[in-house]
Length: 406
Ligand code: NI
Image (cartoon, rainbow, N blue to C red; front, side):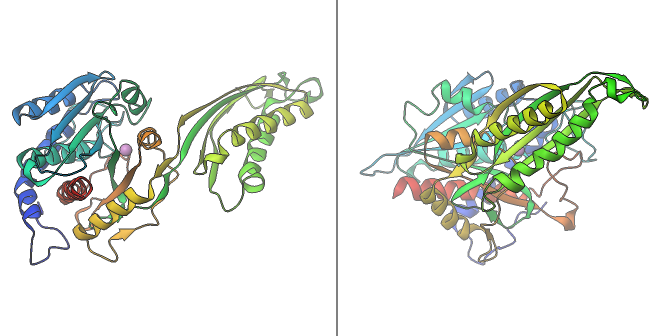
């Protein structure tokens, strides 16, 4: 267990010393949560654990928001002319994956695993809450903790916002982080503007006319139509989207037919669409339908299309990104530690919070190949370097002090 930072400067500040003395407990909470992973909206043991800890520390909180969500508030006692509210968001859910790690804190729930690091996000938020509760004299204003269910889908952020978690007291800004094995420990991925992509999905059934494989002229071959559709959908990104903007159209599923000498009556496909630029909202959807309709019409087939949006793009406010960046630079090794080239076409429902209030979502590097802790997120052997837990707490704490005291 590493208890020092890779950047361990000779002069550890008071904040860092306090957090490092809390670090073993944060690791313990993370491991307890890791052993009891729960799927979205079923985070009951996790939620109970969080509530119990908050009560133990005397932190005011409300449970059962959007089923398993929790909101906690801590008021600073430092005086300031302007008392603001900063929210810190952590997601709590796990994934339907059988863990293959052989560690003492392995998942005890068959087929469910914290394979994305949300156990770490919850532990970091808890560590931050404990630290701030014990050092209320060091900040002004209010910190609101939002423990959110179901980030992996169908999404707990939206129902929590609808339940009013950003109101009373009204949140002025929000921050959140994702432990990130695509970045090494000791780095922070942070940038203004789009960090993660919008996520949209579709299902399409091509309705042809089946028949004998040797008598194609009596049929409408749904396999031939589907093949053209899959190819033509690729031209949306290649030919219709401005090449300066990034977008993805992926058909990840295609099913048709039962036998080599039988022409399939129908073909089913499903796919995912990603983009950063909000101006593309609606445009790609329209092009997907036009492409499918045009090809089907030319081939005498018809179709059934379902298309829906999941999460909007995750877009950071420039000033809040600047705040996180300046704070992170004190915690990780600079200049190499701050990585602005960290965009991903993955999606996040933190995006809903960022549509409501200015904020910043960032990636906290957590991979350590030397300790074999570098498997990608959602892999059955995903795990991360727990040194990142203390770094996450320090970044949050310093953001709170800098944002609320200024
Ligand atoms: Ni995740």
